[in-house]
Every structure is written in C-alpha cells, then in structure tokens.
Length: 301
Image 1 (cartoon, rainbow, N blue to C red):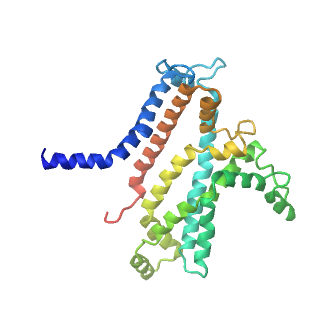
Image 2: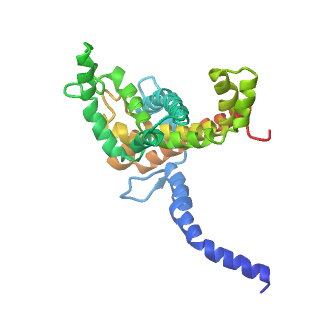
Image 3: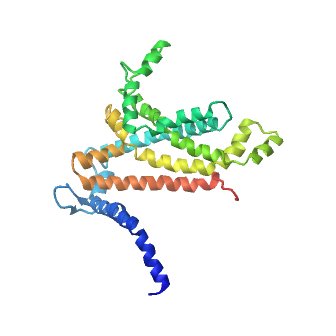
C-alpha cells in the first residue's frame, strides 16, 4: 500500500467517530425528515408517500373558508415574525450598548461584567419561571414597582397587546454571551484609529460611527446571523410562560410544529413545517449576507 493511501486510511480512522456520529445523528435524520415531509406519518404506522400534499395544505390549498393554506400555520408564522421584529433589534442594540459601557475604564468593571453575563448562564426554564412571577399582573414585582409611582401596570402576559412585547423584553435578559462577543471585538479595535480621529477633531459620537462600528461590523454581522436563527426557532419561553396565549397571540411556529408532532402525532406535517422553517432561515440569512457587502468591513479591504 502506498504511503499516501496509508496516511489517508489513518486519517479516516481518526475521523471515523465524528463521521459516524454525523451520519447517524445529523445526515440521516435530516434525510428522513425530508422524506417524512412528503408523507403521511402518524408514527404508529408506516409513512405513506403523498408528495407535496403537506406543503400544499400548509401554504396554498384552499381551506374551505375563503382562505388558503393552514390558517393556524399562517398565524403562528405571523406571530414569529412579530416577535423577531421586536426582539432582534432590542437584543442587538442592548447587547452592543452594554458592551460599549463595559469597554470603558471604570472602577469595579469586572463586577459589572459578571453581573451582565450571569443571566445568560441561568437555565432558560428557570428564567422563564422567574419572569412569570416577575410580570404577574396581580402579585408581580414589576406592577408593584409601578404602583409605587402611581402607575397602574398592564396585564403583561394576559393581554393580547402586551404578551408578545413582554416575551421580547425577556429575550433581552440573556444577552450576556452576545455582549462578550461584542466586547472581544471592541478590544480588537486599533487604538491608533481613535488617536487619528481625535487629531481630526472627532467627538465621541463621531468616533463611534466612523471608527468603532465599521471596525466591529464583522462581529455585528455574526451576532445578527445568530440572532436571526434564534428568533425563528424561539420556543421554550412562550411554551412555558403563555402556552401560546392569550388567544394564540404568542403561538409561534415552533409551538405549532411541536403540537403537530408530539400532541397529534402528525410527523409528516410537522416535518414539512420544519423544512419551511429551514427555508425561511436560509432566505433571511441569505439576505443578511447580500446586504453585508454594503456595511461589513474587514481588515485589509
């Protein structure tokens, strides 16, 4: 056996645990889910191939009431988009603002960094339960604090108008990991650029806009992609806190997918929703990559 072939076999032997795991737990489930999306699969019976019927029922088939597609699917998709429009800008702006504050030289900076990062390592279930008590309309801490200054607090989680904004507010709670990534990017900005800007008479806002943000634009872009994926896959918090209510105002796409798969055992229908979700994420990230040519700047360009 040639030395090149021998080294290739040794390399494959070292890679084999990962390759086996990838095929068994990633590639095979992905392939099966696509096949199931083209089938009627009630779990307790063999999947029956039906072609694009699941997609037609979800997206464009008349529903008998003058509409097209699955009305609950479209509502859950609309709720997901509404949540993304609320939470994604909030998370990006708050995390960047905190990182800018933590990048300054003040006494006790390590304590502040720890305080901001700690919420991000608290289990999501625990954070959801704490927020449920915090925002309770009757005995919640938030309304009690508002009452002390003469404000009658709203029903944060029981009102259709306030339930989704309240969940978006909760999403800001765990931005610690994003703050750390921003902070690493900020500390990598060359000090010489700030010195040159100061010589040109630039103030604090001018340095932020013309130096800081362009230098950390790749970091902003990375966090944007992660945030897009996270908001489309949002599930546990609305499931625990509101269970999709009130009146399905927080019933997001992942909850409908979960219910179809594990409550009604319609795994083919749920798989079709999963692939639609994948396409949505693919399109949104593709748009982000397309627009990045205009605002993301890399060193050396």
